[in-house]
Image 1: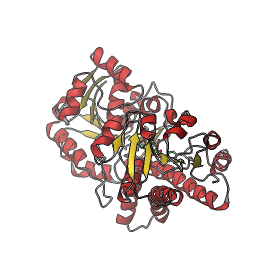
Image 2 (image 1 turned 135 degrees about the horizontal axis):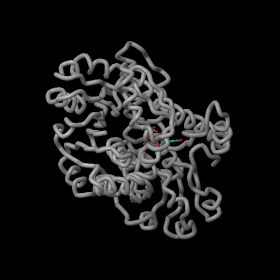
Image 3 (image 1 turned 90 degrees about the vertical axis):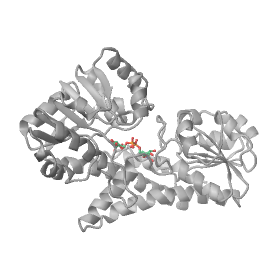
Length: 430
Ligand code: UGA
């Protein structure tokens, strides 16, 4: 099939590359000139595990192309929309990039096409778009909602091994045609109406965020009663009705999805006159979790002023260079406000972080260099390389009280304590 994908973010680019690998002719449309130049030059604009090989193969065999022109998708049978839908300050979703792309398709469409929405849009948006915009095209444009559940860092794996494929649409033939695109993927295809498919995406992300905030609340309570969140979460998660994933207590969720989508769903609820109180609490708990880390540091270091803290891990999670809504960055800013000197290191996200961090933050060239002369270490991202540190050497580099605040419960607590450092996790006994 001839497919166009609008937007070369991690969803669009993974979809484009993987579809080209499945034998389709794919053009990916990207309006950011810098990004487009990199792509046309055979380079990926961001890191995503396993993507480089598929991307290079697609470009090499000529089945994956890039363009800045929406006109390049006019020959495609299927047009997938995977542009950003960022949150506005009031929680509203900014849908302007979708309107921009779809308007141009409507103006120029020459023959019937499937318009497949992969971007996360509020429930009700698709029906609205159909009525207000798509109906104006001179040829039939059939709209389908096809939300993605890819995680950054494992997006290629998630593409090939999804738990389900969700398609929302009211035209059977169109739904079947889109389902055929995924014929080489072994997963159930769940079909429904457009609005319900849109809701699935929000409900899934909000539920996963709820699991994280819930386990963080239990972790905070564990600290107060002297229990340990690790065996608690493990045993709770072994109940198949609950499931063990997304029960890792820590500094809370970040990234470009959970914070935006929980606030977006809360906004949709409010607009519909409904107070989604559980979701509001999930968001509040997540915001508080970052402040609790600061409070812990203050409690253990005494005054924070003039102390030096090393923050290891700036990406919002391991396996990515993405720092959007990263808990680490918020905590660094809170520490700076208290007069703390900060030294940072991240295996992948240094370049992105340097653009946002104030110049007084020292960017180290490696883990050990970042630790030099620090009173405390905060591990904010569970990168595997932080777990296997030589703790004897770390002790030599740090200054008393040599506090290790394990914000992701990923470090070997016993070994750290044995080496004479002070260990504190999230929801772990002191
Ligand atoms: C999330 C969803 O998992 C995807 O299914 C969805 O497609 C994507 O959002 C999206 O809407 O596009 P992603 O944001 O890439 O994916 O990352 P996750 O792996 O879900 O992690 C999100 C945040 O939660 C990270 O900051 C992570 O550290 C945190 N987290 C995750 C925890 O604090 N505890 C956990 O147990 C799991």
